[in-house]
Length: 494
Ligand SMILES: Cc1cc2nc3c(=O)[nH]c(=O)nc-3n(C[C@H](O)[C@H](O)[C@H](O)COP(=O)(O)OP(=O)(O)OC[C@H]3O[C@@H](n4cnc5c(N)ncnc54)[C@H](O)[C@@H]3O)c2cc1C
Image 1 (cartoon, rainbow, N blue to C red):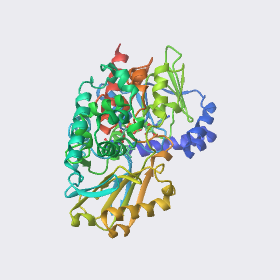
Image 2 (cartoon, protein in one colour; image 1 turned 120 degrees about the vertical axis):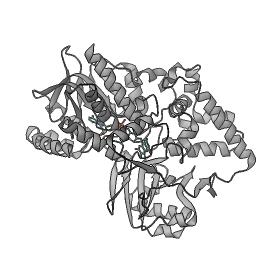
Image 3 (cartoon, rainbow, N blue to C red; image 1 turned 180 degrees about the vertical axis):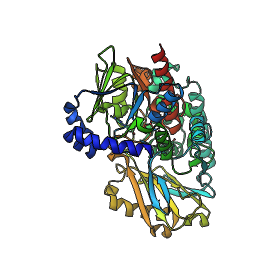
Image 4 (cartoon, rainbow, N blue to C red; image 1 turned 30 degrees about the vertical axis):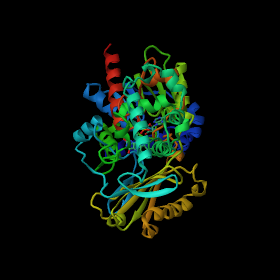
């Protein structure tokens, strides 16, 4: 692949240019790399019109869009040794892979659908035939819906409808402009549920939903942010439905293939192991972007990553205060650090029992499980989401592997103990990606939300968190990358 070639060349040059920094970068520690920043002051290596920082879906899409608009002079700098960011395929044998990051797509996600169409990548239906398993308030039940009383079902339906109605009052992508935004942003979803729910079941189901979708708890997440997220996705139902919702389809070859194909088409414009350490916007003629390997100059910069991850970059002059507050707000971690693990089996044995392999719970340790078997069903894969903060006894990887099998046996029977393999990605340990879809605590959106996608000087902002539609999703990452590129194009023309 083109990227691999440029990476090989880059790596040789990398080692030659800056031994100490290279060691730091190859260790993958932002802290160490930052320490090496002082070495990053050699002569300007190369000038391009645009530097894009981050080769996740958003940064790569920005590059693709620049090219489509006739801007050919750009580079994509990626800190890690691979493209894809929060999407990652892991091999599981037999020529199959499993995704340990972003994975599913669904109806209404037009940006990702169009992109995979252009790239010649297919999708297929995720497996949802049979009963879902629910573990709510300590009771395990199976069916299309959890077992509940009529009163509980009616209460949940009423509260869900009220939330949906509220979110439809929000201008899409601009939560700070909603009537009463400040007061909605002072409140948490938990506070709001306490006022509106008449049963304990409804908050429990919302806890299940917030753990599943945002790896967080209702009592820590801003109500305004929840409304913003739901509005961007078209309401509560598209977010929580598996079949027919955001978890409807899977990507043939795994979602990381989208980034790999884009990178391959961008060729040697994509440079791996190039963490941006500092962006300088002093000189009216050109900006400077420093990496431990070399320094680049550019007319414009696109930063394409989660706001919290931008805290590792030094901006001079300092960014406007609200933009800093936004990044700091996201770094305050109202979400749980996440592990996505796949337990492998000889076959998807649960299907014969009429189960679809999906499990959702409002309690620890496992937040949710999906049947992630290859499309041909030639082996069985149960993908589990968990946070070790909720189950410290599973903090150690070996304990986690065994503990997850035990947990799965509670839901799918003792055959779940006979696993043939295990792979996982602990996103908390990733040096460059702060993690999954990340909610905001109260107060940040109204104080700083406008800076989600507002350019600051000659710096433009991409990344899924800046998207108007499907923010937090792969779809949002793609549309945000295209939007940032169109802004840069307009600004270069001006
Ligand atoms: C476990 C998990 C499950 C998910 N499930 C789904 C799902 O099913 N469906 C869905 O649509 N979405 C899902 N998502 C979310 C989806 O993966 C993200 O929305 C999307 O991939 C974000 O893309 P991005 O380009 O905006 O950011 P990222 O993918 O985070 O890309 C940012 C890139 O910038 C790089 N970088 C960081 N700092 C620097 C620096 N200083 N210099 C240079 N490069 C840097 C990073 O290494 C990274 O490659 C999931 C995410 C996770 C983690």
